Length: 355
Image (cartoon, rainbow, N blue to C red):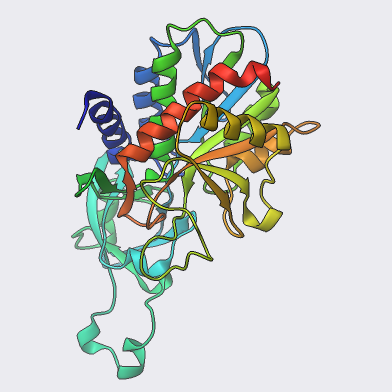
């Protein structure tokens, strides 16, 4: 593994292992702020909580967005025995939650817990054939009573995240939680570090957004305030290169370079502006960066909200192919991460020729 790959792996590990569900991104924001502050001219946090890092230039005004939040849970109710019921924050597939370790982020400190459910040994045969739903799960922190749990600082509204660390796999691949979208954050931080010493015509506004997983909210508010000439969201996308999914559902492959979105959510999300598509694709071609074209009928990114801001902002998406997104065991290629950063940097350098 070369130094460049080691550096971006360490950055991804730091971000992935951090905890920050939608609306509670503070821990992640502080890490990112420390990473970027010496590479840009200005760092600020807006009213909504978005972290904005600006490298000043002239025109065009380029907005690059990567969201900080991860899907999670929130304490909803504590029963008399001290077991905790929870609400889902963001898009979970319930089966992925069963028997996970979790962390409850209280004002008194972090409390460890596990997600429990009715044991299979006492289920009726018909119950065993059905998937366990989140409403039938609970968090067990070892409390002896409701009062015991509350003494730990647990109360309704406490955010809960998955307890999982990044692990290296074979062939330059890694697995961990929240690669959606800490991978995009690692790419954007890397891009800012690389362009720090460059003289650019454009003004680069890197926005690490909040609450993407619950409605693209931070992208909407920050784009309105910044009013860029063009924008690119940096996120993850679903590859079709493993069992259980067909290439007709996704032709994207892990290890084959960044994905440039043409359309997502069947057109209900973003349909990439033709000039943005030309800019990203021609830049990749000119610099010999391997890339893939992504057309999907489900899922969207911050680019959708940005594109619909004010009178409309030309927007697109560059993604890192990540298997098993919205689970605690997401997987990506470090090679893809590096190549995605390459494309973002080259796109920043070439944007003046298109906008």
